[in-house]
Length: 167
Ligand SMILES: [Zn+2]
View 1 (cartoon, helix red, strand yellow):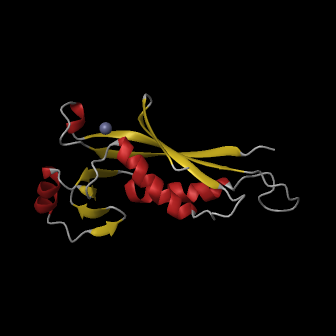
View 2 (tube, rainbow, N blue to C red; view 1 turned 135 degrees about the vertical axis):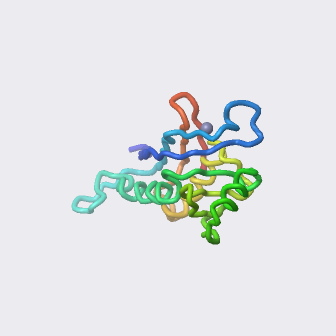
View 3 (cartoon, rainbow, N blue to C red; view 1 turned 45 degrees about the vertical axis):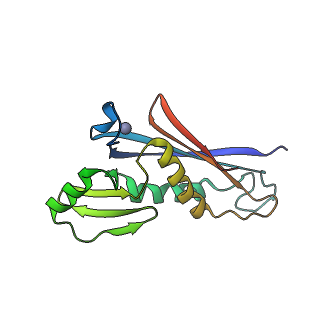
């Protein structure tokens, strides 16, 4: 049987803005971000094995999506060179940030603000960063026949999608 691809999707609510954009994207706004992870591999045929008939349990992919959800759902995500960051952090007297991959997380009186260091929060950049995070959590072996993380799709609207492939 040829290899197959499975996908699992989650949706998070997240605000962002692109301060250097000439159009509407410079306004603070939000999306329901639809994030899909794709994994390819061979379907296991091993009677009695808990993953018989599967490439990998969907729960494994779900765990990677859960981490993205924990870090970004219902947050405002900005870039460190956005002047709004200083205003919000200063005005709210926010305590020192917690760090997370590629960024800092502030708990302010306005809510949680994630600040990406050097990465404007476009769907292309988020696809790459969330994909890297997912890849680390999936942690598939490089051994022949193991599942392979194929890539991630990030849709900020029904009509706008960034796909980042890994293999
Ligand atoms: Zn947007």
